[in-house]
Image 1 (cartoon, rainbow, N blue to C red):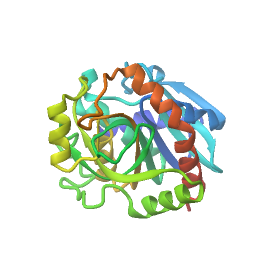
Image 2 (cartoon, helix red, strand yellow):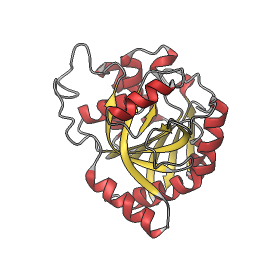
Image 3 (cartoon, one colour):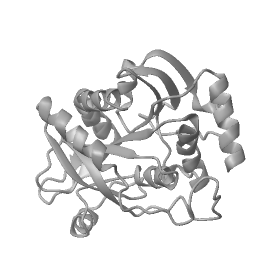
Length: 270
């Protein structure tokens, strides 16, 4: 794995991606945030050695580097999911490459179904913890040069960054929640019984990504901040027919508010 990480990292450095302050992984329907990146370098995933290629509509499959919020960032416009058939090593490699490029924090976003009865479609939830029902991406041989065999997950999501985001949301009068995100495999949307079960075991929102990426990042001691955009509701009496297109549309409506939070947070990085 380390050899592939180094090969990919050196390729990207040669393309001009040097010393980014932060990395961003953008979820379904949220890729428009990258429009605010200036002086940009764009590279298709298919042209990056060892990178998988995103196959899901709404995930453009581009790595974008440039100026954002007065900092240098590298953004993944499109992520990788287990339901696409990728192996854990394939899901892990792009996150590890971001770390080896030099980022100090990883920011993530996703579109999620809300199972907390107080949530509304269009709300933003800051993830404070997660329940991972996907395969753990660290299963298999461990390379001690990359991270410890048994990484601690007591603070998967950075408390300082969460506090900063709450202050920014308050300043801009943005409705915000905190909550627990549950990662499941997909690609089916959940049944009413599954939504009920996820709520019982402590989830506030459910989706098909993010937790594996955070596990990989924390394996390398990389601080993480993540938000869910609530694009549909898994609450009894409020469940409606859901499609990938409807999720994309609702995510796009919320993107401006999420961009405000992300821009100010990245600007404030030391």
